[in-house]
Length: 166
Image (tube, rainbow, N blue to C red; front, side, top):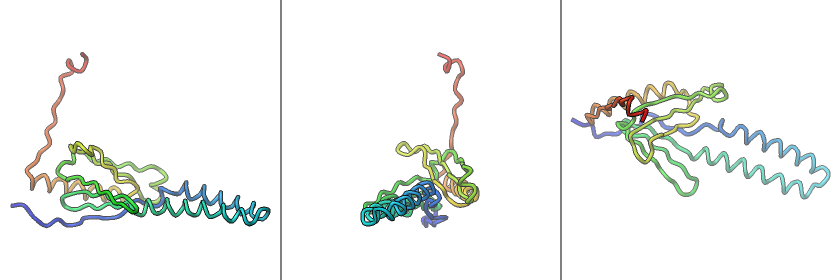
């Protein structure tokens, strides 16, 4: 008997750590503009607003990228004004990998890549999520549960080496 209630397992967004390079470079530009502002005051203030607007835009883009993982699906919603949501059925997930780049590991973040049999989205990437190994285990557990409910099993075919060499 199939459970009809879909429960949220985890939800969150990408970390602002992804914007560190942008933030630092914009702060440097603001400092340079401020120094120039002592010479060209009115014009420099106008230029100083542009990096602040760009910083806000980059923050908003990351802030509006939302992930939601339920007992049945993974949702990824993007967009500031218009929204787009991609979904991936958990029973379609074939493989899960965690990538923890050094600069993300310093903040206990990582990327999780879900490889699936979904034709429109064969690789589903969750970027800069907190505690990626814990989340990976949670996803894996729900993938297995969902496969059992749907009675889905993955089948791997081993290719004939003689065919690969032709």
